[in-house]
Image (cartoon, rainbow, N blue to C red; front, side, top):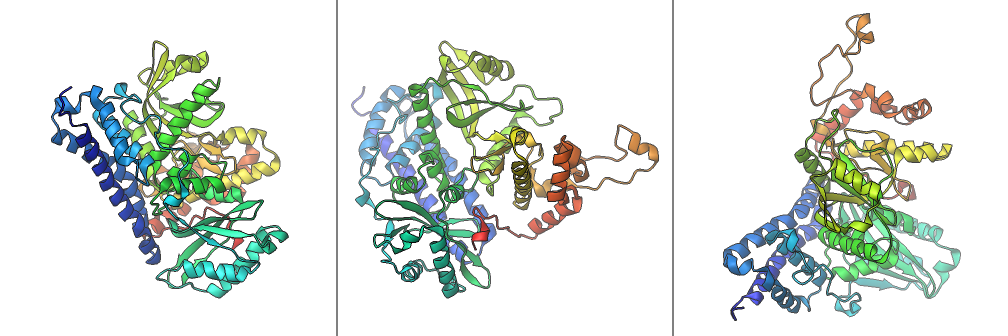
Length: 571
């Protein structure tokens, strides 16, 4: 090796590009407070999409800069990249965002090299960061000890968390929060002299809300604490609720939600803090929830390979009706499905592969309003052959041979998406009690309405394309036919010209490519007549084209709806 091989220079350029990305990410993020204070709701949506797209844009710029800055025979000598990795480790050791910088390095490597060259010697398949960080690196929380004086506690909190816009009715809100706090906790807790409230210093912003996030704890127990704030234009800031239920807080940080805007100097510390109050959530989901979705992807991949190495779990086809566009497999002990595009679609489908990819990528950048599962896109997954049940592998090779192949003792999956595994709604209803059917169909209709109000039309609204989460929420997860609601032409079925028209197997009216007739929904969605009648009673307006046109008009007027990730009855 020539003594001048520039490992340190390449490492420095990669890290400089990361600093550029982090600064742009931070500028978008810290603007969230002003956007909230000034009620610039549409700008909030644009900023969220811009921040998601920023990562790939900056990786592309960094890759271009490296190609311009170094001779190809030097830059693409992969045998020397362990030296780049070693130099890079020295550079990132003192950083507060060192784990993010590892993932950035991996992205740059994959931008330069084919995935066949991925190895832990050249990049960070396994992290080199310590699992526990010294908490004194960044004091990110405020601590309050009420000593039985809840009114003092709440007053002090909101003295510390102020905005350029005044609270609309602080005294009334504080009195209500004190009542909610007493109702949310056992009687003895509020009197415990050791009761402590710990809140994360930065406020979290998402859509039209701001959130104070932390925990309450005594010597023996702890509860999560989330206080959502709303800005009512012309009225001021309202304190909307006080939430201490772990399940509800988990939903606020759900994989079905848009990412929070929060300025986090030391991400690992904050994720560790969230993990303490939400122990059931994987750190991959927590990183993703605060905007570091690439780090979430890294943590997910590491958890997956560790699970495969440590268990006898084998891939099987996911339960449910086989898809006409996608094929789906899963690991029984790993709460994820893997979705591949089939080589051939059902004749009833008019989309092509490129369109399906476009639709799935669209979901990443829109407001999912708690009703669409987040996805992660992967290329060139390699799994041990013996980790597949033979029936599963045979089906994958049959329906997606251009995507799945066997290379010796390895199965190569060239392209896939991962999603959280849920119970398909059609299967859930088959086993549900009468009360559960009522709740599920009520939430199914709400899911459709909330997606529509966020300018998303699911397209294929069949029950099999929705899932039920562990919290009982109905979530849409099949994206090959989604579109913006404003792109759809909702129509009433024209009156029949002659009595024979209604007996004909063919429509007596023309149908355009974007035409949708909501009157046709009932038999299309429900084969079960009892479910059809129940849904009509719960959400019959969905069968009326005028309902959909009204939503379109509101969207075109620039209205941004409130879809709350918590039960508003707590207000």
